[in-house]
Image (cartoon, rainbow, N blue to C red; front, side, top):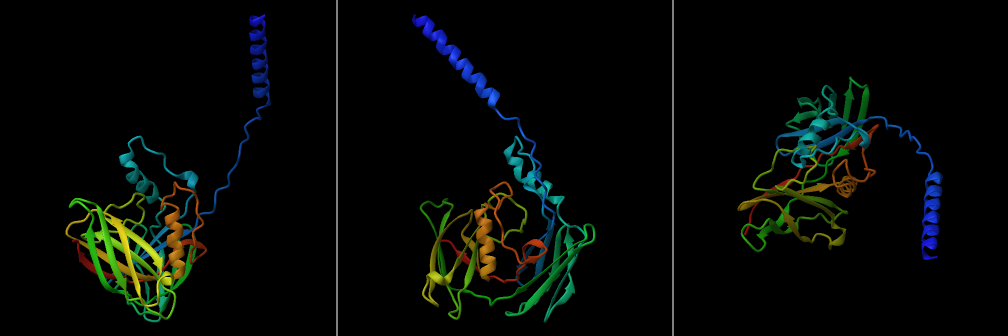
Length: 289
């Protein structure tokens, strides 16, 4: 009798499995439309040197490179992949009250305005045209006053070889409006910018914040950073706009990688993506204690 019950149970399970498989829907082919590529703008002011503008084309996340078996090669593969999207022969101009010129091509996708002047309160319009794709973008930005440190000190946490540093600083915070700041910390020296790196730089770190949490004119913070450094570090403070602050927040939420969850990035570029801004940092060399 027990054997009969076991056979019955097996038959019932088999029947349920057949019904389950029979009810499985046929796979559907989903056609995901590709977004129309647009120009992507990024800018970086180099104090007393130049204004650098990088220009690339947007691409679909579905076209991301395959993960390599050797993960140590990931950053190299990413850069080779992204190199095909850099815009090589664009016409890039900047026009403002004290500057009107066509930028010089330094490398594929990289254009420079040498000896760019810096006058707080001036507005500048960027125009970029790519004859290969017929894409055209414009953007306008306004420079902000340069803000410096009132005081700053850096202390290495327990252990001489520790990578953790505590930075204690005060900022000369204007009291006339709500302000936003970007702090960058570099080990020993400011490295060459790699605009398309998708790995954390162990020799640099940053934090952005608003002064709305602090009494007006009394902005004092203590931040912890992880980076390789010797006996000294380079620290910069930059007065940035609210819109650019929101762009940085969105970039941080995305993990600064095209492999992360999609984020809708703010932009001030007409008919394109990215962010055009002109802000000059105040730089200070700080001895680590």
